[in-house]
Every structure is written in structure tokens, then in C-alpha cells.
Image (cartoon, rainbow, N blue to C red; front, side, top):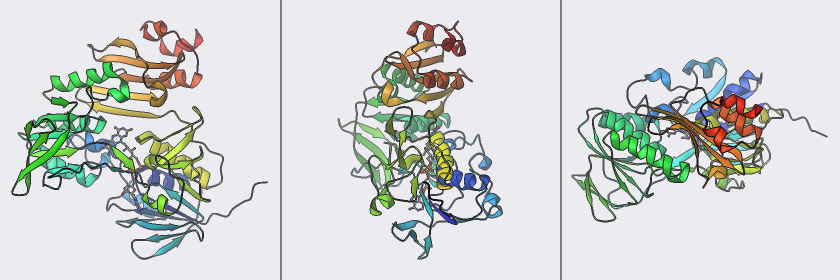
Length: 415
Ligand SMILES: Cc1cc2nc3c(=O)[nH]c(=O)nc-3n(C[C@H](O)[C@H](O)[C@H](O)COP(=O)(O)OP(=O)(O)OC[C@H]3O[C@@H](n4cnc5c(N)ncnc54)[C@H](O)[C@@H]3O)c2cc1C
């Protein structure tokens, strides 16, 4: 027997993409009760992907980043509090306590607190000119520093964000050195062959790499950074240092409330947490994925978007599961890349390549037990639908067919 609950007050902690999308979905689904959307940042909800790409480069303006027009929140009677945090959750009485001193009762609570950049604790990491990169304010500060060009920029971290920032800094005419722990950048994510492809792309654009390398110390003068000293004692001149060594899910609120945490807030496929009437979505949620039967925490835009929608529907008592195939994209120099799939299943598999890396136009497929589990298209637009269909089908496909450019992707399933 299902018990009908009356939902009159929904609180959303975190006004990022997942939180704001949940608010939008609640209204589009016809929910007329109270929505309190609480955001620690001072800005209306915005998209982060442009911050390391076209917005940082000044090629897209302010209209490229909002999740919804600013007026949408008041027009749709969403109580949006900016610069306010949810300081504590009291799951028993269903109440949240805000940093403003107020308390708000909830019938359903969504935790969409996102992720926080990891720091490296090094001598000198507090110097001016050294920063992590996550927010619109970080982006505006970095743009001011990079835009004049002619600076020495050291990027600590050779993951996707470090690589995108390196591309942007280079486009502004700065000299970039990328410091990475891995011997080949991105190798853990996409393997050595494709990691080398991205490394070569950056080198062709003037980026220098120090790989298998650590930063040991940051040196400065009059409070401002002047150099990064590597673990081997090399001194890299630096006017700007960005620490881009990944993020960690911001679980502090959930942990204090006693929720089950395991690499993020653990949820079922409908984004319910271990506590009644508390849900989680976006970067902070480690959700059960129906396709793999395993938990999967994704730090990508599409997961925050889809998760926000699913959490809203679940909060309203609808049957909904987050079953979409994980997806993300990156743009660097003249490269536009999209990736769909399950990195955990693809790990260690040799990619099957359709096209040529040298021609910068190819699709890479990863297989597990003969089935396609991930696919990445580089400068081959409009292929994601077919890649996702191959993954969803669980069909066994011969590598030769995957690699054969004369075999249309949407025909492979008919073979
Ligand atoms: C520079 C950059 C570039 C990216 N590029 C891509 C890309 O190209 N492709 C891609 O797929 N993904 C990309 N991503 C990842 C994508 O942006 C994230 O996956 C997405 O933003 C996650 O959304 P979220 O709502 O879960 O969390 P967030 O965007 O982190 O939002 C959470 C919000 O909650 C707030 N908050 C935290 N705690 C509280 C609290 N207690 N009370 C109130 N508010 C709180 C935070 O301040 C934050 O504003 C990028 C991320 C960054 C930073």
C-alpha cells in the first residue's frame, strides 16, 4: 500500500544546476507549494562549463551562463535566497536551519550541494595569484589575470579542467606549464593513446608539460607568487598558478545530519537518500545506476541536469529513476569532444578507433565483454545518439565493425 503524502514545502540546499533544475521541474510538473532554494553563492544559479571555455575566453557573454532568466524565480514564486547556506538539517522534525538564523520546515528536502575543489597544502599556497577554480567569481578573477597575456601560468593538475584552462590561458597569449602526477595526462580516464593525443594537442599550441611531477613549494615576493618549485627542485616561473586537482563531493551537511555517505551521498536510483524525505542530486550524489547495478557518482553537467529533474519528480511521489547514460563534453583549441558511457566498465580496455587521431576526427569505443560501454567522438558531431544506442543495446559488436567507417553507426545494431 502506498501512503499518499501531502507535499506543501520543499527545501533545496544548493542553488547550482541540480538545485535550480529541480525547482524548475517542480513548477513544470504543476507543484504549487512552497519552494525554498537556498544558495551559498551570491549569483543566481549558473552553468559552470562555460567558465573554463567560451565565457573565460570572452567569446560568450553573461547570457551564456544562467540556468534560468533571473526573473523566472520570482515569477514562479520560488523563494530564492542567495548568499545564505543551509547550516544544519534536523531530519527528525523535518527542519533546516539557515545561516541567516531562520529555520524552515520541509516535507521534502533536496541536497544539491555539489562539489568543492581539492586543495594542495604547500608552503606558499596562500600567496596572491594562487587559486582553485570552481565559481563564477574564480572565473572573473582569472580572466582579469589572463586576458592581458604575456604571463607565466602554471597549472597544477592535468585533468579536464586543468587542460581546458591551459587552452584558454594559451589563447590569451600566456606561456603555460602543466604539471601532472600522471605520466600521461588523462590516461586514467581515457587510456594512454588518447591521453597522448590530448598532450600532443596542447604541445602543438605551446603548452609545456612536467609529468610524473609534483609541486613542492610556491615561492613569492611581496605576498605574490613568482614561482612553483617542483619535487625535483625545478623552478618554474609563475605569475599565475591554478590548482586544478579535482573536486570532492560537498557532503558536510549530509554527514552532520547522519545520512549514509560513501563517495558522496548514497542514494537509490530515484535519488532517495538513507533518510526519509531527503533526496540528493548532482555532483554530491552517488546514485545507484539501473544499467550497471552499481553506484555511480558523476561530476558532469548532464548528471546535474537530469538528476535535478528526477529528484523533483521523486519528491512529488512520481515513479522516476536516473537511468540516463552518463555524458560529458569538452572543447579545447579546435577540438570538440563528447563522451558517453561508464568509465568504470571501460577502465583498462583498449579503445577501438574509427577514423584517425592524426586527422583529429575520430570516434573511440571501449568494450567490455564484447559490448560497447563507452564512446567518445572528437570533431565528429551528431554521433552521440548512436553511441548511446549501442551502449543501451548491450549488443555484442565486432571491433572490426566498430572501426569500419563505411558501416553506419546506426546500422551496427541491425547486423
Ligand atoms: C570550470 C568547470 C567546467 C566544467 N565543465 C564541464 C563540461 O565541460 N562538461 C560537463 O559535463 N561538466 C562540466 N563541469 C561540471 C559541471 O559543471 C558540474 O557537474 C555541475 O555544476 C554540478 O552541478 P551541481 O548543481 O551538482 O553542483 P554545483 O554546481 O557545485 O552547485 C552546488 C551549489 O550549492 C552551493 N552549496 C553548497 N553547500 C551549500 C549549503 N549548505 N547551503 C546552500 N548552498 C550550498 C554551492 O555553493 C554551489 O553553488 C564543469 C565544472 C567546472 C567547475
